[in-house]
Image 1 (cartoon, rainbow, N blue to C red):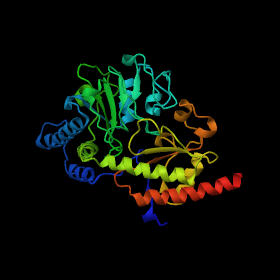
Image 2 (image 1 turned 90 degrees about the vertical axis):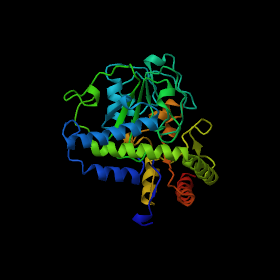
Image 3 (image 1 turned 180 degrees about the vertical axis):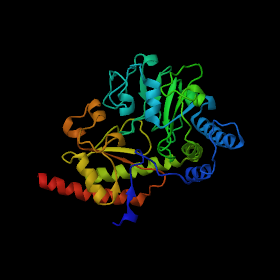
Image 4 (image 1 turned 30 degrees about the vertical axis):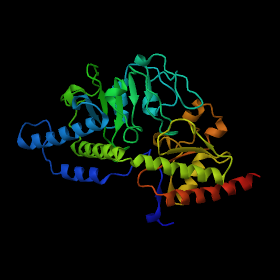
Length: 350
C-alpha cells in the first residue's frame, strides 16, 4: 500500500482539517491588526474573533459571552480545575485526571456514579471507548471534547457549570479550544496580563486558529443536522461485525452501552495493543492504542482497568475511530488486513 493509499482511522485523536476551517484561516492571515487595538486594522481582527465566538457559541448552545478561547482543551481544563480538587473518575482524559481526586466509581459498562455533582467533573464521552455519560444537573465541569460535533449536545440545557471543547476534534486547527462558562460562574484567571477574553484569559488572541475553530464549529453543526454521523454509526456496525467474524474471541469494550457513533475499542487477547498499532501502521492504517495524549507510552489503559478489565486484556486493546469521510471499502480492507495479522499471532500462540 503506497503512502497516498493510507487509511486514517484515528479521528478521535484529531479530525482532518475541514476545508471551511482552512479557508477561514487563510482569510484571517490577511488581518494584520491586533484584536486589542482600536484602529481599523485592530477592529477588523477583533471582528474575526467575534464572528468565531458567535459560531462556536451557536454550535455549542451557549452565548458568545460564555466562551473563553484557550490554546486547547488541556488549558481549558486547567483554567476550570486548578486549585479545586473536584471528584473525578479514572476514565477521565489525562488533562482532567491530573486535577481531580479520581475517586468516583466506574462500572463495567463505563458509566460513572456521581454523588455530588457540584463538586465533581465528568466527561460527556470517553475518547478511548466512546462510552457516553448521562451528565447530572449542576455538574461543576464536563469534558465535551469528544462529544461536541458528534452528538447533539447543548451547553445551556446540559445543566453543567463549565464545559471543555477543542477545535481539532471537529476538523478545526490544533492549538485552540475553549472553556465555556455558565453565566454567573466565576473563573480565576491563570494567565494574567492584558485582560483579553473579558479578563479571564490574557494574551493576544490566536486570530487565525480561532477563525478556523469558528468555521469548523459551524460546519460540524451542519453535519449533525444533516445526519452524517448516523451514517458513521451504521459504518461502525459493519466494521465491528467484520472484526467479530474474523476473530470470535475479540472483545468490544462498551458494546452494549451508549457510545459515540464512530468509536470502536476492541481487545484482541494475546496481541499487545502497541504491537497492533505498529503492524497496522506498516500496513497503511492509522489506529491508536488509547488516547492520543498517552500514545507512545507502553502501558495498559487506565480507562479499561477502571472498567474492570484485567491487565492482560487492557494491554491488548486498540481504538478505531472513523468519520464522515471513512468509506465501507476502507473498513473492510482494515478488517481483512487486521484479521490476517491476528490469525498469524494466534497460530504462533497455539
